[in-house]
Length: 463
Image (cartoon, rainbow, N blue to C red):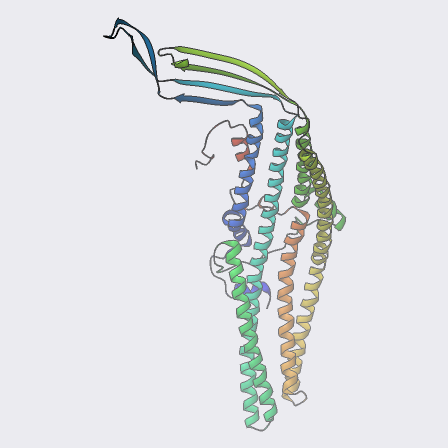
């Protein structure tokens, strides 16, 4: 029984195709949606960085209550009875409500190119996040395809195991009948009973394996597997040669591209930190209106100023120098990580190519093995009828045929999965290349919506 036949036995009128399953995974995967949200959050680094080009505006205001009391003396206009001059106190009282409000605008003119380099770094971070998103997408699609094919394989294997149990039951019945008429011994009956018990055990294991695959299908696809169509390998998308696969992977694989963008981020971090050693030049303009100034009730005053400032760093204890040296080491690490990523991708391509190239040969060999095992089983059964073969030989040949069929089903599954793994190893596995009928997520839309945004709390989707 082949992989397709195994699933058709359990299939229904409306079967799910692998393209439909992958489309479901693409649209509903929490992992992929989380990565998309992370990419959108990284887009916001661009307006944060470009804010260095824009003025900083601050409004200030204050109001209060102030009361002043004073006590003075002045000469009296008359003498007392003793002829002594009287001094009469004179009290003064005043209250004011001093207040002011103003507006201050600060504009950076030059800060050691930290704003320019910050914007460049933010753009590199955006590109890195997009490549990471592309990597997550192809990982999801490869895992979903494997989950789909695992359900197909394990369903077919369970069907084979169950059919084997039925055959073993019939074998046991026939052996018992022959034992009753004295054609075989009790040993033959025990061997048939043992084979049946082993076959039932294998069927229970196959059932458990299928349940595990169904759970993985639900995890990656988002719905329960019911009836699945057979799937074909990605012949058209697979590279024509190993050298072509290697060359393509080194230029297209998202993991390598993400690592290269990370090198750019680290290089710009060095320039940003070096910018702290440069002077900064800025200008600040302010306007302040005051009321009841200087404790004088009823006064009004307007103060306006424009002040240019130049700050020249001289020495900060060595912290900035240490930060620059540290960022240079991190840049070296990023470059080494990029080289390591290239080597890992290359090894993955070589491995995936070998599995893919040999998978067809494995299927051909297994098909020959199945045909030979079927012929051998028929021959052994006929020979057993005339006493030339024992019951155990029949059972062994029957189990050999079963195992070759199971191996063929696994080989058919492996060829499809290996094709997806090879396309993923090269870096071309995506909803676009697979032609999935989905609303494809475009990360540039959100980026264009926020990159030049000056103000606002709501996200582009209204949150």
